[in-house]
Image 1 (cartoon, rainbow, N blue to C red):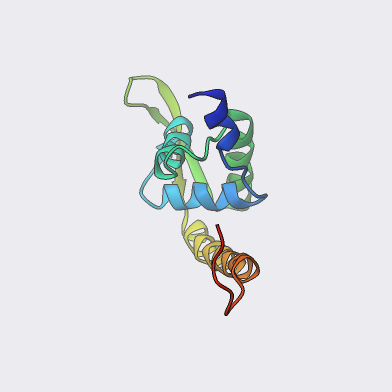
Image 2: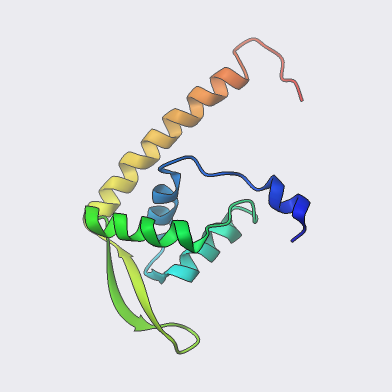
Length: 120
């Protein structure tokens, strides 16, 4: 990836990483690297999650009871910690998704006021 492409990546808003992790784990248990990779792939490489952000977020989500962790073996036969969405985490994902949708609508109203033609 070129320096220009790195500069064009989007910065995550505070709290967004938690939502992205919860949504990723909705698909099933995954280890940290797989979670980060899934977010990157599903964002068309716009979002890159660094380990220094990912693992503190995972620990925070465990502490809140939204995810659980258990030891396992990764696809390349290495020991790894696998994270799983809990029932409480599923409920929180619904809450957080609603908050995000409301936030995105508010931003859209500011960027594209009703009755105003869109500009580049």
